[in-house]
Image (tube, rainbow, N blue to C red):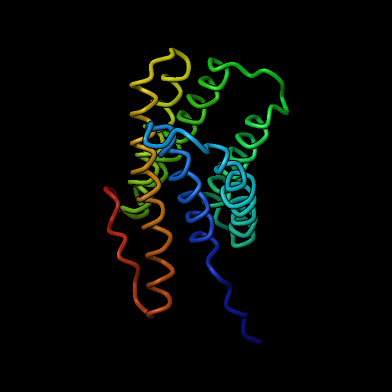
Length: 186
């Protein structure tokens, strides 16, 4: 018996993360000011649910890094969605800032795990931990410049994640190797 080929869940998780991050980051950067609630549906379903599903599928495939990353960031988007709706009551900017910095610490450690993967993941996680720290510091201190800078770095993060995910989809469709480059220690 031959085993049936399974789809790679990483492009789904990366795409859900990227699109949701891009939309929110345009608001965080101050490029858009009205209609910020447009990101809520994305946070609940594409950034949240799709990444949770990708994480479960990575677990099933035996990819611990993908499982932890997608499930954690899927849970982050669900937290963002519920917090934005006020489900947890009056969460302060300082409290949100602490959560963002904590996610920055987590992401920094995950970034260390990309040193032998590929340049796409390396760049995505590098930019993401910087994004979280800038947004967290901006939220905790009320420094609008740091918060806007986090939004701009978030846009770059989204581009890197989208490239990493979609390069895999297009390469597989064309029967080619994804052009993701070598990470520093690979």
